[in-house]
Length: 604
Image (tube, helix red, strand yellow):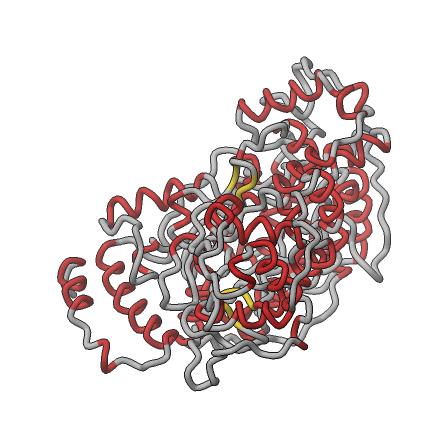
């Protein structure tokens, strides 16, 4: 096989005119060529990934103003599950619950389940789960691990065997999905961006690309060895509905179809296929029938070790109450040399993979914990929620957040049209409470609402109970609203003509009632009035770049003066008012002049 430069030359000379016309088929062929190159450049799936040196809470990387990292860590580690706190503190911390464990033994392979119980950090560096068994003798630790595993196995329901039959096409589709739909905003990319996309500013030198991947590994939520972790078929089931196992919503749904979930699972399992195989000793762990006595003992340990403080078992499962005794939150001493924050907490205390900066942040917050008894302002609640959910991995707001340059290389469009960063990156959230109607915010946050057909990244779904409070918080934090447009006369018919090709020709770029536009097919005009607040729409048409820096939306009323003067004698206020009156009809509005027939419309 020739070197990378040789393959690059072959890539440059591919007869693209003879490749399949469908863009996804073309991209898969291009991806295959680059994969061959990468095999020779040692940057390949299955590479030895750099492991995080401390537990990872991705949202803190954005350093949102007013967000206390210690406060976020207290919530993400669910400290008050053991250290009881006041109702005000509980509400403010919005702690992350652990995954439901009633189905853990059917979801996770027996060897991996025992590895997690034995030492979570060794099984998955960067995890927020602490180790609970340091200080025990080897025999005591193995007896405890086995009892807990037997208890969880006693709760699992038998599942039919799932045949493993991932085709090469499915793996290729999963490769594309994993790197495109938003997974790598939080998780480590497996391959360099230049190997995935034909057009990218990412470094194409293999050594530089490998360095970037290692840096991203250190700041990503780790995946661990998914092939060794999940039982056959269970990774696909998890990806289809992560909230079923993790209702806390830190791992959101990417709105995958069953076929897409299967394809992504096939790809992710192929990444580690044949690597990190369990040792002979681990492989010999018994996985047969549950032993009732051990299972009962495991249930007692589940309560006494404090597992039940963070983990519920799930619907239709028994409820276990933690019997672990810990100091109340108000009595914790941040200067103590023992306890959870110590470098060696000792027997019977959780051992976390803290960095010194994380320990310092937690101590500082505990020293000033009286502040946590004060309810958050709307702005504080927004910033804290965006940090906890890592919304800032994709979205910027008020000058913070958004993907770093090396992660931004993985964001792409589903169209061949060049829309710049506006067409690749998710929209900023600055002033979003002034921009969107509350009904549309609910659609986006909890009902899969989406109105940017050109973005490959999908808006994740975190679960209504986890994020719907943002509707009121956004609108309160972003008050006062923009000035409303003047109340003047207008005409919906004039608006129809302005939207058409004899006016501002909005149909050149915008879809209409599901019909593609003449060129790039951006937001549907018939949906705007139900999504946007009228005052924001008014200000946006007057100054598009003021509200969306970098937008390619042209300004038809620069300095408040109409460039199209054939309507209302060039009266700016009447023209904008007329367009809004027309758009208020939504999908019932009569089509504007120049709407292209389906055969002439641009399709992304």
